[in-house]
Image (cartoon, rainbow, N blue to C red; front, side):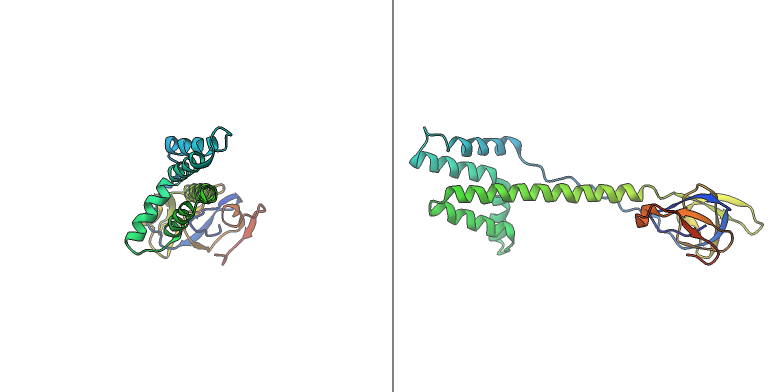
Length: 212
């Protein structure tokens, strides 16, 4: 049966094959990814202040103060980190955003400062969600890798062992329908395998002796 990497494609049907197995690392990387969460009470308060500033009953200095306060509440996590970065003389997008918003508020362009802050927070939130989703997809892909392999002994018998314990140069047996646990080369048999988890191609791939 064809060899496979960590994606572990599945061999759907055909003759079993003895394969040379490559070394497999025991550890499995794990990562906890959570999207950037918005501080809801602070965010809602800021949005309410900004929205209320557009009402006719609020005008002039009152509206300006409401927009400024709302902007500071909406962007509080960003501005806090931006100020920390500035104190370390580290200039990144957050420190530049903090400087730009502060300058806009000083010259009386509160609505522009508010729009920049809101759009930046939305962009940051969507980016964090996309990254978290990608990490979850990758983790889900690695979970389909089998943990055990059928090691072929010198007398031709097979026994199931943890995949990471299979020595380099050993032979493993991959039966019809089993996932391929290690990188390897086909030394006996031929069949079709499902490599869609690795390549995205839906059609089975034909493999035989010498394929790797």
